[in-house]
Image: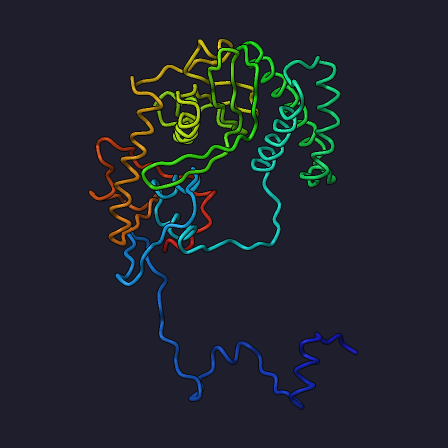
Length: 345
């Protein structure tokens, strides 16, 4: 009368009275028919991986900021994600609040600026649009926020995002922006070939002066610090791609969605933004040149079959130091590394 698994029924159909042994006895008892399995320890963490001479890396497709950031700052992660094409499970998983809020916020901003004359709408029309579009977007892309016990998270997110988009409208209107292009595709080239990127917001004034704004859900301390130290690499790459298209460097800025704060270097372009004063005279164009030199440095290592593992707890050596005219290597957040376990133990 006990329930039997369908697979066991299939086995019994093929093997009459199949013997059953406890798993523990198979693992612990000695048996001459089973040779001993030699112990193989897991590989230890080390700073450098070296590929066999018979293995070569071939370039595939266009580069993006995501791929180039890994190549520059954590080559072993780039190796496993792109040339090796190792992918995490495709089983659907629910994003944590940080990623979920960021994705939903980006999509709301995109939808708002894809309207006709978004900066000209009245406050009343904006509120009506936001309430309807927010509810629809949550149903389509963030239904987990509608589950029991999540009401406070949902309403807090609603209030915060509504005020953030309202502040963004005011900031852009105060700057005299006449055109906003969300998720603009940017293509171009560099020493390594073709590049592709999507800028969150590309802005234009009546004079034609351009700016690129990168939106982040949080990071009101992290991203102004990048501007301060001239380390805004993603904006530098997008800025160069736009420069190749329009002929001049755009102004760059960050917008922190959970705070409704715009951070910029150029107070003339963004008069209402929180101005960040650089600690160096170097600008975005110089950062691009540093990127190119660092890329060339990594290419020499890749051609030699060497890939650096840049993780906390692994001491760097002389080969880890970037050239003087390049970017210093930074440790990327481990939360976005799907290959931590493959680095060693």
